[in-house]
Amino acid sequence: MLRVKRFVALSLFVVCASAVFSFWLLGQPGAGARTAALLPPRAGVKLQPGPDGLATAVNVTRSPDAEWLGTAAAHTGIPARALRAYVNAAVAANESAPTCGIGWNTLAAVGFVESAHGTYGGGSLSSAGQASGPIVGPSLNGAGFAAIADTDGGALDGDAGWDHAVGPMQFIPSTWRIAGMDGNGDGAADPFNIDDAALSAATYLCGHGRDLTTAEGWTAAIYAYNQSDAYIRQVSSQATAYTAKAGTAG
Image (cartoon, rainbow, N blue to C red; front, side):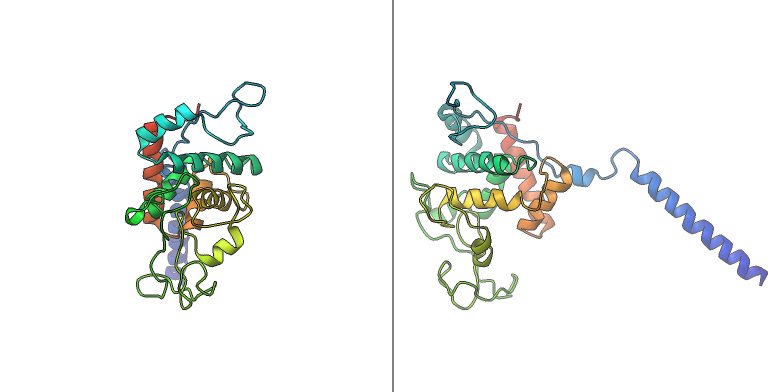
């Protein structure tokens, strides 16, 4: 009986000591650094002047300054038409959800990973932001990818059996039906148009009250877009690289 009591006492001591050590470790510098390291700095942007002639944080035109756009496109390698869509979408999303704080470089990183800014397969974007050809991902038939049965009758992806991600930001048809938005004011939400796709992606990432200025909020947003740690790291790395080339938000 005495041995049992000693064993119980020793077990309790080990459990308590482990708990204390865990709390101590969490409080040390560098704890949680893996998550924090994923948060890319927000890239800067120069917006066109407001109606009073002054450059403001909220730009009613939702457009970047033309000179800034050309310089940033050259430095980052992002096609100017795509970059304009990313900036416009980030501005609009932050106006709708002021606590979101999404940076255009995050959208650009997603666009790069998903379709090389709409140039995948040798394509390009028109002056209206339309992809020159259909950007359709592989069949989501369970062979190396998730199995998602057709949800749109093949209207967007041309496959009435299985879904495919579509457009520059690679939306699944069922997600597009819920999240698709008209970003260029033509009255239609088209996943193959970079303005529509970028605004839809920005709004989707900002959903559920996420704060993308925090490591936790940013990581949760990208994870909601694609449930892959490797994907999160890739988007983070690319977004950070865009900031390094274009400059931080000041």
